[in-house]
Image (cartoon, rainbow, N blue to C red; front, side, top):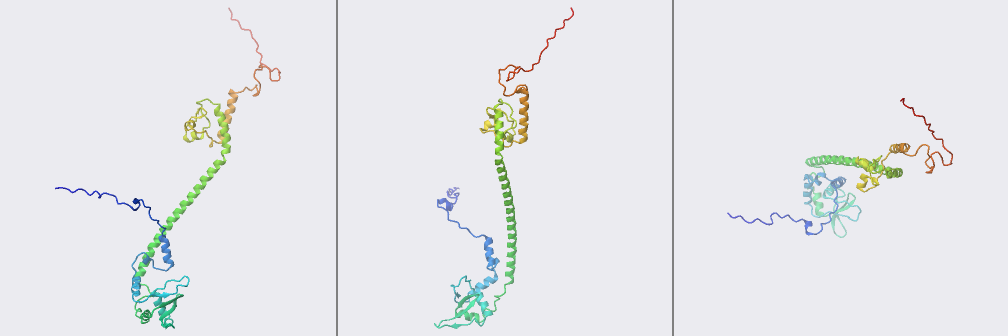
Length: 316
């Protein structure tokens, strides 16, 4: 049985919009669901209907709108004009029957003109007759349906729980942001304190550099430099610096050296000078080449006299 050749386009990836080399369209900022829900609440509309729930009252109002012949005309020249619905017109006719009358104007045109919710409104005579006949009185337009109220309560419960989770997350993010801000301030303070302390460490660096220059290669440098201290290595002199700083090609720094270590270094230096350095009887600035018993002023110094004692002879 012969098999057909596989379709070469079977495993091809579908091309995206950006694969054609054409830049994608500009994506405008869309309002958040929270802002939309806040707008629905401010307009006193149904949140359940806004979320896509099929409300019985809303379907009834849409069906009643089909009874009317012409559109509702209102004065658009007034600022902040709100939209007038047929439910508003029917409610006005029931509460103000004396103002809801059909009038004839000098041009021969007949209509019903009234003021509803502060807006001058006008409807045609056909729609006035439908409302005045009481054909819409049997529809419960004033009170909401029980199932609509139940759907609205369920929707409010769901949105309230989501809002609770949302502001809990917002509190957690705010707490983390406060901790981050505090830690950044601590780090900034430490760096500024370290920068202000560089003047003292530069004097220590000069002192330790002079000491290293007098040391031989292979001697241990005490106190160790910052690099050896951080890497926990033994700070050993090599050429003009320590071995680690020569390898890294950086200068030896002693920013983290303490005053206690500097004090121990000075004590060790003084002890070494007493043991291996200048004798106590010779001042540091005395010129060389003078006899041992003569000072710089030519006054003979007291010298230790050796008395030769005769040797004892052994009995022969």
